[in-house]
Length: 172
Image 1 (cartoon, helix red, strand yellow):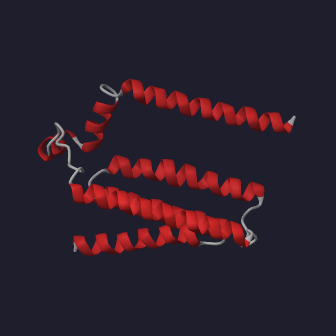
Image 2 (cartoon, one colour):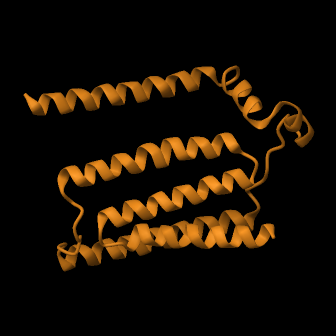
Image 3 (cartoon, rainbow, N blue to C red):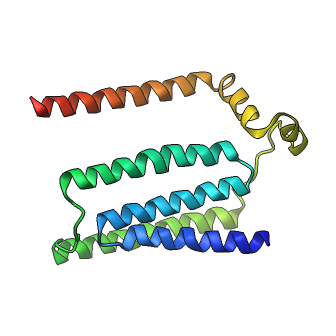
C-alpha cells in the first residue's frame, strides 16, 4: 500500500515538474509548480516530518507561488512565451540539455562512488516518539543553530525592506 501511494505521488510530482518546464503559459506553469510543491509536502507527511510539510505549504505554496503569480499578473506575462526568437529557443534548449546531462553525470558519479551516506543523529525513533519531531527540530534550531536562524531572518527582513524601497521609489 505504501509503495503504491509513493509511486502515484512520485508520478504526480514528476509530471507536475515537467508541466512547470514545458508549459507555454506562465500561469499554468505556476499552477503546476503549486501542484509539485503540494505533492512534496505530502511526501514530508509520509516521512513523519509534519513541520517540514507545513513549512513547505506556508513558504513555498503560500508565498513563492502566490508571489510568482502576482508578478506574472502584474507584468502581464501570462500569455504564450512562443514569441521568443527561434535562435534564442535553440540556445535555451541546448543549454538545458547540457545542464541536465551535467546534473545526471554528477548524480550518477556520486551515487556510484558511494560518497552519499546517511548521518546518524542523536534522536532515535523512540526519542522522537517521546518528544515529537517538531519539538526536537525546534529544540535544535533554537539552541545550536540560533545564530544562523536569526541571520536568515535578518537577511529576509533586509530583502523585504529593499523590495518596499524599490517599489516606493518607482511610485514617486
